[in-house]
Every structure is written in C-alpha cells, then in structure tokens.
Image (cartoon, rainbow, N blue to C red; front, side, top):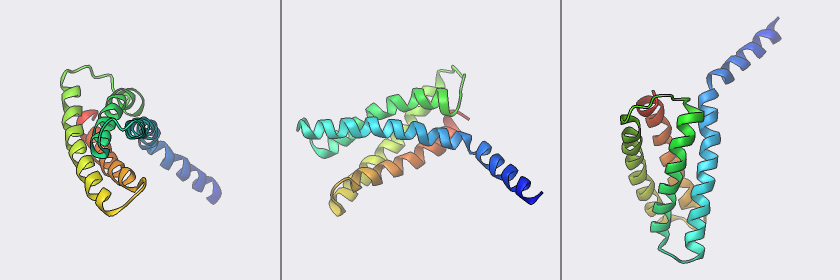
Length: 135
C-alpha cells in the first residue's frame, strides 16, 4: 500500500510540474538558438561579444514568445496587451542578461558568462511569463 501511495505522490508531483518542465524544454530550444547566433556572430567577427549576446538574446526572445505561449502556458488569449507584457518582461530580462554577461565576462572565461547570463534571464522570464504575461 505504501508503494502505491509513493508512486501516486510521485506522479502527482510531476503532473503539477508539467508547465515548468515544458518551460525548461522550450528554454533549452531557445537557449540553443541563442547560443547558435552568439557563436555565429563571434566566429564571423561581426560585432563585439557583448553585442553578439544582445542580438542573439533578442532572436531567442522571438522564438520564446511563440513557443511558450503555445506549448508552455497554452495561452489562447489574443489580447494585444500580451505581446506588450512579454516585451516588458523581456526588457527587464534583457537588461539583467546584458549586465550579468558583462560583469561575468570580466570574471570568467569560456562559456561561463553565457551560462550565467542565461540563467539570470531564465528565472526572470519564467516567473514573469507565468504570473504576469500568460497568467
């Protein structure tokens, strides 16, 4: 009987976490797109590391809106305010992403600045989208 309750609790936990798991999967896709463009711009020497990160973040943000709206939060809301709220959350996230990248770029080498700035913006985006944009 205890084993049955354990599995039931385990299943219910993941059922409740469905939205977060979808956000993580979408996030991995968006981060891959972000990283691809970040590296592409750096390899081609099109701009500075900081500007490469800023532009790649914006490209990832566009994908993020559509994927999170549809798959993570399953929002059918067509209100014109939704993209506006998304942009506001992403402007905050963009600023923190940029600042954390530039700060960590002075402290660390390799991919650490990218990973740190991506983590900061991911937390801001999840809570902002869940509780403000697609609530």
